[in-house]
Image 1 (cartoon, rainbow, N blue to C red):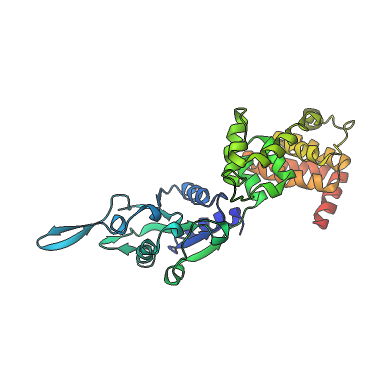
Image 2: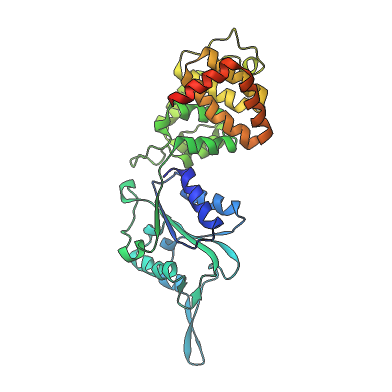
Length: 334
């Protein structure tokens, strides 16, 4: 499933109060942990991130303390005692089999030793797969059978939505639209390689004018720098958004085309500006460019504006017979 679909699934479990333990599988760096944290935050739930690989069995079960001639297990302070939240067993299959065995009781019976997970807490887990060249242990079949299993993969549209919502530099969004294969390219021979997580770090480096190679690796950084060199050839975006795009041609170079559409998307923050951009693209570019703009700009306008702004854009499109016909034709081809 896509990251956005994973977020929707976890959101549904929490919204319906279904205490079904989930195991999230996927390659490193695609945002598994972030999605859990963001979904919990959306429901105003705390998250306890528990790394079993860093614990010994007594750390989870607790220490035996004698009382009246009988040993009692005193559970650790990091386990929840009350309220509601998400107990997140991240990188669970990095833990050795003995610790995964301890987790088995915690997940199935919601208890270990004398400790019981409070009724208001969800249990989610995540881990990498063997094919990701991660140093993982096989998950015992009895433990695996106690989970819902969710396989998540990198997805450009999910990343773009996250990037646009969080103000990533438009150059990164445009570059990955142009080179989607570089969203996630694991290279076990290099310490730095492209992933959604490392592109988020790269975004912070771009913001302060630093090299992104330490985040995404030298090869991806070299391609990004080459892409940046084309941005000087962008058309006058403000003129287009203001309705003065009639004499302006759409770029012929694909990399500049992606940068142009991304630039228009991020600047089309009102219905009239989005309408002018769409009208220009419909007249000057191939249909797929207008379709790309519409998919991102409509979503961004809804999120950052209001239903009124999106409704105004729909009315503007409906009043333009040629544009409305063009969009209907594009929709019928998709």
